[in-house]
Image 1 (spheres, helix red, strand yellow):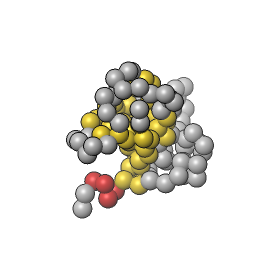
Image 2 (cartoon, helix red, strand yellow):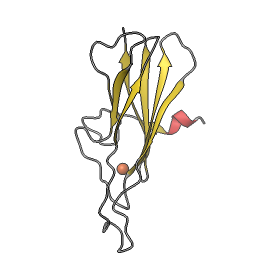
Image 3 (spheres, helix red, strand yellow):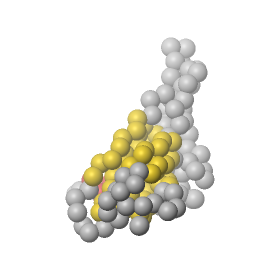
Image 4 (cartoon, protein in one colour):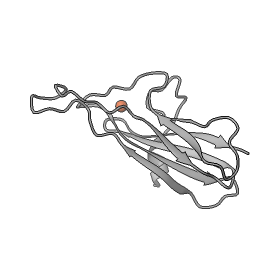
Length: 129
Ligand code: FE2
């Protein structure tokens, strides 16, 4: 068994857990750009004390087969927790983040996310110059 055996994927338009990786048009080699990673672009995922997206990590795999790079990790910490009880708190962090990155080679951006109930999910986007 390998960790990849536990990472699920699907079309984000029909499965609410799949991270969406958005790359702007016109990305150029060696120039910084913003990558957005999110869950729930089409179908909202619950954000409650009992059921939430805990984190998203963003990776880059060069097209030439080089070693993967871990670009960013986003932790989502607030899900309505409170001393008054579950879901009574005033704050929720939505699983939506932006990383500014710079690439010198084309390749694939892969986001892996973790739902505390439904496990690991991945989504990806190609980057070409
Ligand atoms: Fe879930």
